[in-house]
Image (cartoon, rainbow, N blue to C red; front, side, top):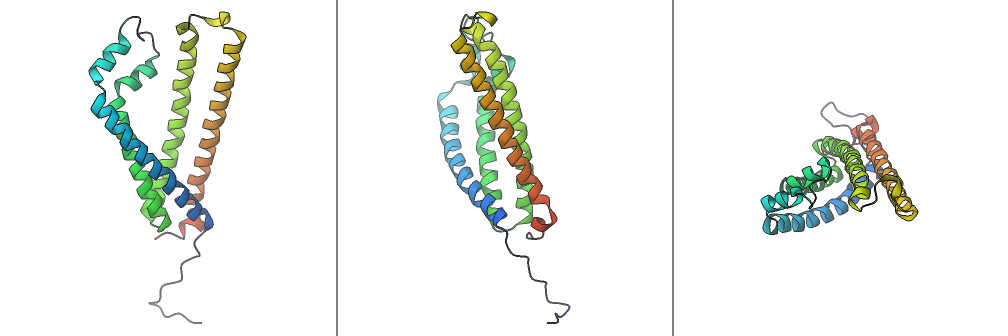
Length: 187
């Protein structure tokens, strides 16, 4: 059948991959927005940022916390705001993916790459905390009991596995979204 020059070519079929990613993240981001709203309200209504910062930096009350953890507490209001905003952007981009909007595809690629960075940064913070914990519990280095040491080792291995696993999935999603076959579905 001959097409006239003004007739647009038919769109490629909608892939199950994009539908699955979109619906999965619509559900996850929807829950994340709900959690983020609660977190935002609690932190902004009930947490006195100055008192929190003063309390955790006071001698004997966390003053020796790792710098990465102190930074988290010092920026708790901004972090909860950013978490809520990123959750909303993820929800909007997920709906846009389902509707095959090109801006949503590129936004989602950036969000997946940001998620990888956040997972790796989370490992850094957790490592700092795990290095700090034995001394905070009064068990420096080799004096940790076998059970405590084994528990911390298992926690670290599982955390690394999950962070790297999720990072690999997010990298794969980002890669798939930029392939020509998937890009052809978007307008």
